[in-house]
Length: 299
Ligand SMILES: NC(=O)CCC(=O)C(=O)O
Image: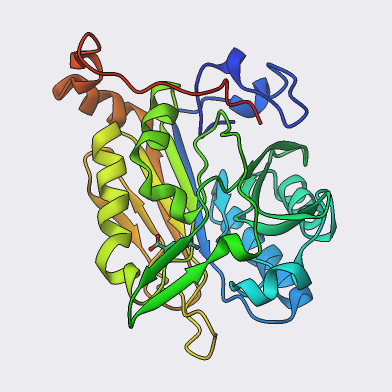
C-alpha cells in the first residue's frame, strides 16, 4: 500500500499475509491524492452512490489514491451508529471494493460503523486497484470529550475501541491527537498519514489544521484529512476543511465547508529532501528517550 512504503516486503494484507500487498505497495514516488469531502446525509444508499460517483470523478482527474471521510455512509452521532452499522464485508465495503477495481485506484474508505460480535467499531477499510481489501483499521482512541457549554461527545457510549494499529498510516479523527501513533507509523516507514475525521465547530477551528501540521512537521510526512462536508442542520455539525499538509508543514490543499474534492500531488522525493536538509530522523537521542509499541500492531 503506497501510503506506507514501510518496505514493500513488510506490508501486511487484510488477511494478515505478509507481503500480499506487494503490488499494492507500489512505492510510486509521485502520485495524485484526492480527498473527497462528501456531504453525508441520512439516506445510506445516497451516501454510497454519491461516494462512488466522486471516486469516479477523482480517478478521472488522475488520482491514484482516493480518501473518503469518517462515517461516510452514516451521519456522525451516537444515535446513528447502530442503525447504520454493517459487518465487513457488507454493502458499503462492497461498494468501495467495486469502485477501487472499476477505476483502478486505491480507496481509503473513510470509516463506517462496523458491527462485529455484538460490538460496534468505527472502522476504516482500504482497497487496492484489484478490489482487494488491504487493511481494516478500527479507531483506537474513542472521541470522549466534554468542553462545558460547547461540546460533550462520548463515542464510548456506543462504540468499542480497536486494539491494534495497522502498518499503513491510517488513523481515524481523534486518533490524530495522539502524537505517539503518528510517530510509530513514521518510524515504520509511512510517508503519508491519512485521517478520515469529523471535527466539530468547537475543536475544528481551534485544532484541526494545527494538529495536521504538527503531525506532518514532527514526523516529516505528508498528512491528509477527509471530513464530511458541513451540514448545518445535523445534530453534529462537522467542521469540513479537508486538508493535505506537506512534510514542511505547509497546507498544500484545503477544502472549505461544502462538498468538494481536493487534490494534492504527492512527491516523496520532496519528503526525502526535507529529511536530508533537517535530519531529525537521524538525530534522535534514542539513548535518552524512545517511543515503543506495546504490540506488533498487525491488523
Ligand atoms: N470524530 C471524532 O473523533 C471527532 C474528534 C474531534 O472533534 C476532536 O476535537 O478531536
